[in-house]
Image (cartoon, rainbow, N blue to C red; front, top):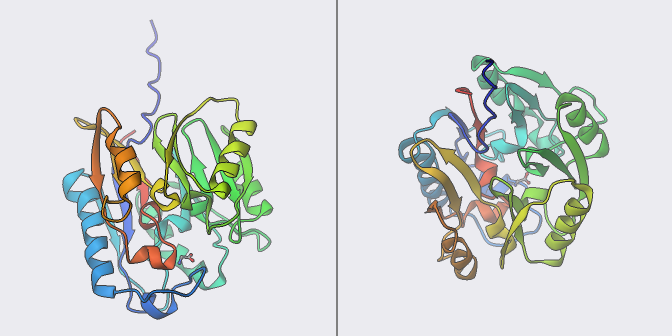
Length: 283
Ligand code: GLY
C-alpha cells in the first residue's frame, strides 16, 4: 500500500516576514487621496501588536526586516512577493518608488531556501496586494499597480494553478476589499466595486466558494491562518473601527477571532494582509 501525499492545509504557516515603519511613511508613503495625518507612534503601536499576534500568540517564526527611510512604504511587505508552496515570485511593484523594497524580501526568502523567481521583465508590474490565492486557484487584480504582463508571469511561475484576471476599480488592490477568511470562504466588501469583482471571480471559477459579506470594504481585508492546536484563526479589524463588520466576524463558528486595530496604516491604504508575507516551511 502506498501512502497518499497529504494535501497542504490551507492557511498553515510557519514563518512571517514583517518590516518596520520608517519615519518617512508619515509624509511620503503613497496614498490614493490626501486626508488625515498618520500618527507614527500609534502606527508603530498597532504594528507591534500585529507582529506580536503573529509571533508570540500564534507561534510563527518572525523574520523582522528593518525599516528603510528611503522606502516610505516598506512596511507593506505583502506587495514584494507571492509565495505558494516552495516557490516565491519576487514582484516588480507598480509604483517605481517601491521597487527597491523587493531586495530585502529576496534576501530573507533565499535564506529560507525558497525557490526564488524574479520578475525581471520591465513591461511587467505586479503588487502582492493584487494576488488572491484561494488554495485552488489564483485571482490577479488588474489595478493601478498590476498589469497584464505581471499576471502572465505569475501564471507562468505557478503553472499548477488556474490564474484568472479581475479588474480592480474603486480601490488600490484586489485585496483591499477581498481576501480569504477560511478554506473556500471569500471575505468580500459590500461596495458596488467589491461586489462586481466577486461576480467576475465567480463567473471565472469552476469552484463554488462560500462568501462572508462585510458591510465595510476595509474590513474584508483580514488574515486567515490555520494554526496547529488552534485551527481556524482570523485577524480582523476591530469593533471600534468597524462595528457592523465585527458583528459579522463574531458569527463565525469554530474560529479564534483576533481583532487587530489598523487605523493609522489604513490612512496610507494599508490593510492587515499588507503587513506580512506568510510562509510555510514545515510542509
Ligand atoms: N501606501 C501603499 C501603497 O500605495 O502601495
